[in-house]
Image (cartoon, rainbow, N blue to C red):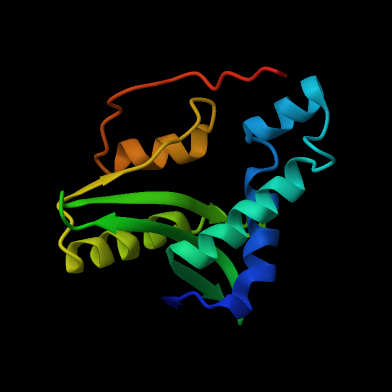
Length: 152
């Protein structure tokens, strides 16, 4: 079942994020090179990101066996007809069941209902599972970029 997310889901959304992105996030590289930023390690920075998103974005959560197994969140700009997928995360214990695809479809359906004709998002080049899904779903890579980081 997919439903709208609520603030009550936040602790589980954070757990899913950490489990899902722990092996691919560039934030871990930042920690290994520069250490925690202002005392906040990559986990804490991800927690803060999801908390901020909960305040500003629309969340769809996929529930399996009465527990959130994954979620998608983002925004839409109806003036230009573009939606932005900020985060798509599926608990690794629940992956391989089509949950990411279901969430992606639910998010796209919502975007269409809000007047969007296009969807944009970013994915790390080494996030093979996600990128495979996006290619199969007909998305086209239109750019790649570097994340530059420096202590100032």
